[in-house]
Image 1 (spheres, rainbow, N blue to C red):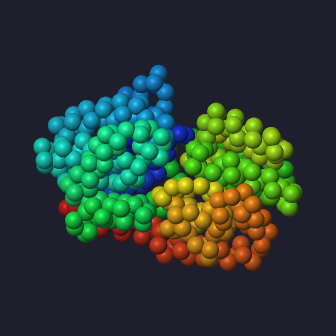
Image 2: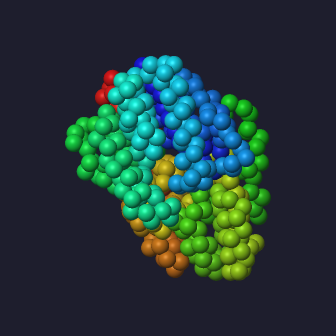
Image 3: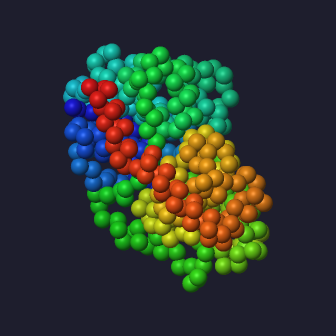
Amino acid sequence: MKVLAIAPQPFFTPRGTPFSVYYRTLITAELGAEVDLLTYGHGKDVDRPGVRIVRIPRLAFLGEPPIGPSFLKLFLDGLLLLWTLAMLIRRRYDFVHAHEEVVFYCRFLKPIFGFRLVYDMHSSLPEQLTNFHFTKSRLLIGIFRSLESQALRVADVVITICPTLAKYALGKIDDPSRHFLIENSIFDPVRFARDVDSQDERSAALGLPEGARRIVYTGTLEPYQGIELLVRAFGLVRNKVPGAHLIVVGGSAKQIEHYVGLAREIGLEASTLFTGRVSPNAAQAISAQADLLVSPRTEGTNTPSKIYHHLASGIPLVATDIESHTQVLDASVAFLVRPDPDALARGLVAGLTDEVARSEKISAAKQLYETKYSKRSYVEKMRAVLEKIR
């Protein structure tokens, strides 16, 4: 079986690390398919048995694509379309695995080239236009909504990544057997084609004082991630756990400058560390050093993929009590708190000091991960997709 996977994302850059694309293609290859992965020019190549990465030109002078919708991504997606056409002309594929918005043009290419179509749906794209404040145009949002509905109707298989998105998609699909819920729940270390181990080790070296209690956040620093909430809550935590340190992994220089200023204003400069963007492996290595993990997200419905890593980590997790988290988490596996500074601070203090609760939640989290989200479960779900698409 020959597969063309198309990922409209930076592939393994500090700004964009599409683990889901990597693992989907890797597992597809492990299950016997030949996979060509077409993606942006930005990023590092990885060691991927059975997967050939094809990149459009990087055009570095344009900068890196931002998170969410942008005119730069629209331009790069146009290049992806040209490369897709060239690859479809040169080689016959059994199916095309289209991630996110590239399904909009794959939907029209499907009857021309006769391939079957898998729509890997990571979000509702019309919602992204408003969530990222890209546009308020009813016309543009309406066009995206129509294209999304067409893609859901025409795709031979639709993959969603969380229960809320699954419910949304199933409301538009006439045959529920075409739908598969596959959470982005596996996180084996990424094997880069070039040796970056020493860089990962340097990035993971935190240099904190001996005995420091480490609260670690990893991810982007977009407003919906709740970093301001986290910094303000941490100011309250320091009064009760003087040895606590906050490590925030990710973010652009401009974002870090803003939050460092906030930490300085609260008097936390000596007990907070903003690492900036690091490699995926380094981010995992820093998380492994934590005494407590935290996800302070304030809005959203899609479950962050890092939540599955946190469940399996053996480290307790504090998370805000919003739909983005509670699709997966409950009070038995995490310290769930309201998204306000006082409540988050209480959760962080409990997560650092309540040894009984820490132990109970770690045990329950590991059991939940093994039962529902482990690699074994993931592989079986991907196997079902391939059996459906054959």
